[in-house]
Picture 1: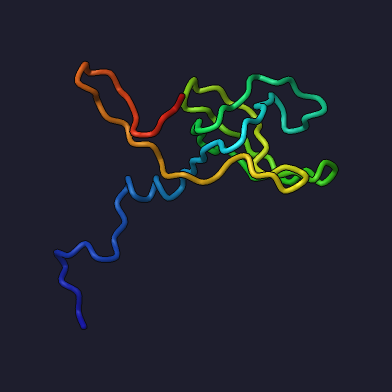
Picture 2: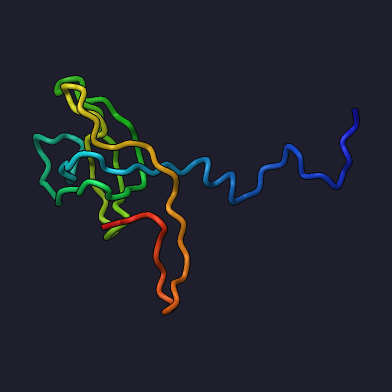
Length: 118
């Protein structure tokens, strides 16, 4: 079977490709965002609230000593970047995967998203 040259079957667009590389998570349990991967030497920047969406920038990284998995994330609410526990030492889950929020212009021209960023 020969494919017609004018079909796009099997072709991934630039936008679709970039979305495959991006990872977003929603906070399911309040957790601190810290300045460093090592929580012993870092400062708390602020707490992520339940329902808040973050973009994962690095990780996950396992902390063998503390038994937790952490990621470097950017909070969409205020663009703050910091390290967040993805999974705690006792198996608690703090972040879960979520689709990328869609940006659209509201009636007043202000950009908002379909996800609640709180």
